[in-house]
Image (cartoon, rainbow, N blue to C red; front, side, top):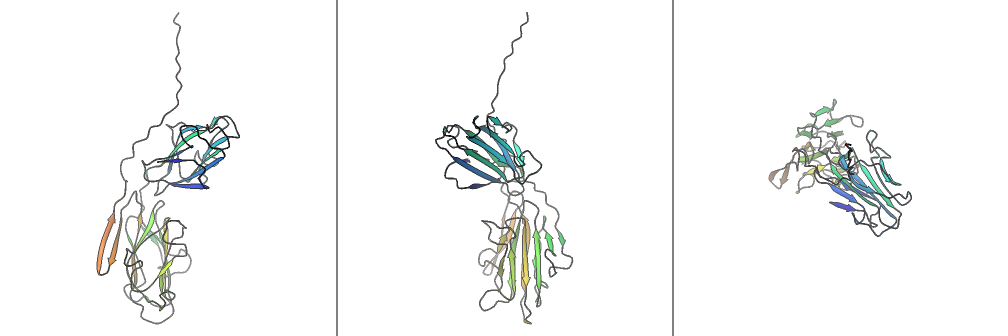
Length: 334
């Protein structure tokens, strides 16, 4: 899929990489021909997902010899140990630091590709191909660091490290009454490159008259802000006798690799019901399936989706042209 530099680009453009074998081409306008535009400033921030890295192939970068006209920069601002660590590589003033196309560069990401053109002839040309590497699908075994249970004091006092198996998260004494004046918290942590999935199976909690869940509630929060996530760092509180998001599937996923679940009851000495029960798991669309239960009225449906691509054999490499110079040497035998 080509993404072409243009004047319509507003600020920095995010580029999320898909599965390995699905490259994205970043090019100058009208590539490989000249373009009719000046004062261009294009920037892409390329981000990997699901345990992959960013593979960068430099197909062409011709910026000319005028040091004030055109430049192409590629760098990884968060890296310290690879060739793209800031300030990275650059083509400008007739100097091209980029390796040939048969020698791609791999970086953790995000990788920034920045093109600036102040010239009037539109002769600068570039083509940079970015794609995801194979994901790292190894998962550690689940390990709980919750020695005093979830109703403990201090941030992060109960951490559930998610691995290959599902973990049950439920209110104390479930399905019996949990009791009053409780403040409990679980931090669900998935391996790097994975997300956390939380599937509510049951809920039977006290509900106030305004349905605002001010007294007893379970709160689900995503510590990482996201444009696409359904949760926030402040979280969303739920109570009552229906699972969250009823009658649709009661399934929440984190934007990053952690999620925080809090359970609170007030001091009232009343019958509170069963509380809640949920299943937590680590998911990765390139490595693991996702499974969940969906209660629809009196019916319980089971759903499952398999990984999109991996684990599989690595994708076939893409071929790009390489500039070669041929020398013919003639020997004089006389």
